[in-house]
Amino acid sequence: MEKLQQLLLGTVDVPTYCAAFVFALIGALISLRLKATNRDKLSDSTPYAFSWKFLIQDNFLQLITGICLTFLAFRFCNELLGKELTMWLAVLIGALNNEVAGLFEKIQNKARETFK
Image 1 (cartoon, rainbow, N blue to C red):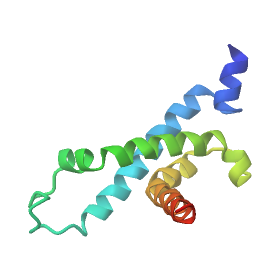
Image 2 (image 1 turned 120 degrees about the vertical axis):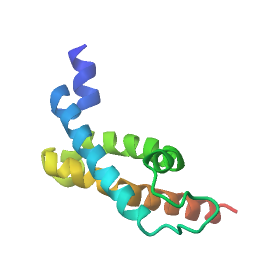
Image 3 (image 1 turned 135 degrees about the vertical axis):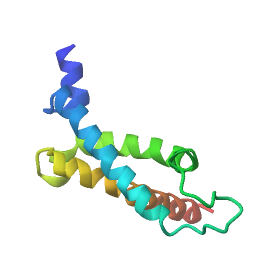
Image 4 (image 1 turned 90 degrees about the horizontal axis):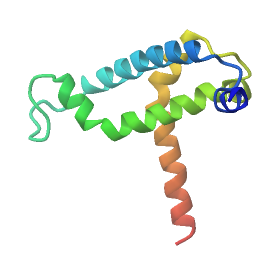
């Protein structure tokens, strides 16, 4: 069982992962909130007054993708960045995971266009 945990989590222990996910969530929520300030309040598809409930519902799939990307970034932090996972790095990963997801989407779209 220890071998499985080491393969899944690398050298980072479970409490560190849990704390890092909390900080990544804070980073992701700050990023979403900042993007929400640019929304069109007069649009029929968004509420006039800011709503956390609407923000979460409207971005649910994006948040799930972000959780997966965050886990991968935490797991392969050493390999990708050459740095140990820190809480500050977790905040940055959480805040930037939307941009990383967008990058993956662009790569995927280019690959689809290539094979048409």
